Image (cartoon, rainbow, N blue to C red; front, top):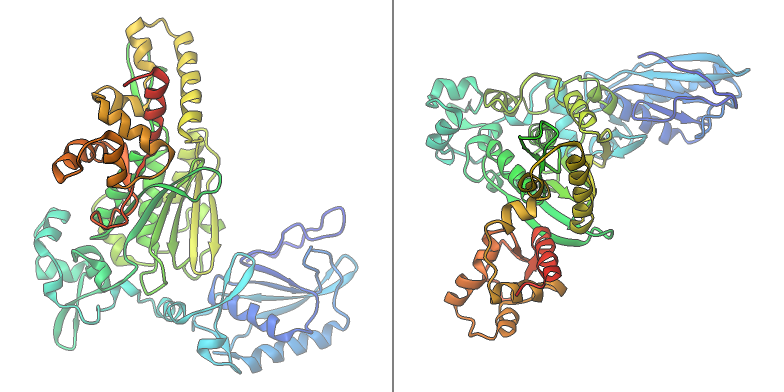
Length: 512
């Protein structure tokens, strides 16, 4: 790696601490120094620079030759397997600093000898070191042996756990034993053919029964506190099918408008969120997540002004955010990657993240944020504010601007002012007296079934629920607070974003 020791006008290093760079004032806290060396060797390599403050100010080391020898002995005596980084004495700003250049090790995982493998293994996230848990230790070991988690046999699974008929339908061809072997969806284990972890993730009806976190949790949060959940969906089943389910959730909580910039007599539907880049990021999360007991599912959160996707496992060893932005591709799960590629969910290797960044820029949106946390990677896409009332004001302004640019008929002008909540709900919804009353009741706070029927003044039997409440749920106006258990005694009903905006529109017009 290129060593950049450029100084600014104040005499401080311009390149700050990062996943591949760390500053240390001296060797006094030798344990912290050794943790950094181990973390670099387990992650993506790096430069440990001794004689520099955290803010990049150069102070140098007191006795360069002695410190160089001491660091070499510390590493040789305290790290296993043994490492031999290059340790240089570098003149800088009138001082001498110590630079240890650590490469990504081929015998991962590396650990501190005095505390052992499971207490002394560290890896790098952002500009800090993290102690590796058992799952991360196993992954580091697999990555060094070039055998991934999804290529390993699934303990306890048999061929009966795969739905070969559904898998054949998904792949568009019959899944013969030879094809299953070629795709590494099955493998031989002690004389028997058994599913691999990848086979379970792709071909089992319920992968989460074998890998508890092999699912996607989606939620729509409203308001500045990000605590008001107005819609949620848990996505289970074979991973390739999860892509469309997650995208359906995102579309259900987005808005749709008509774009007339393509010509005065034509219209084009435009979603309020960048669907293609988001789909690429969803695919990326599914393919590159770690499914080896990392404690949480993949998460997709739709906030008023951003959508973030968080996947367990973080970046694979050898990968950094900078390399990812450049299009460098290192696949954590090659079995999943191959299946997704055959399904055309992955177009070309290495083009995903750069393509996402280009598509967002073309849509006038900023570059996404990539944040490595403890064994997780979060990608945040910034979007226009989706508070329903703010969005309507902005949409109306855009439509007026379009109307001023084109000579359109009154009918076309009316169409231009329709956003998703009108396109999908208002045009085809007949608002009866009870419907409006229910929506108004839910406008202030969640309500139980009993509360709803008391408000409209009828006896709340099942037929009444199917007649008055179920259609509102099916149309996306109302959601359950506990969708996983519809008959829960504590079940309540709330307005979705579309339902809330629509209710405000109806109230403003004095409907009902």
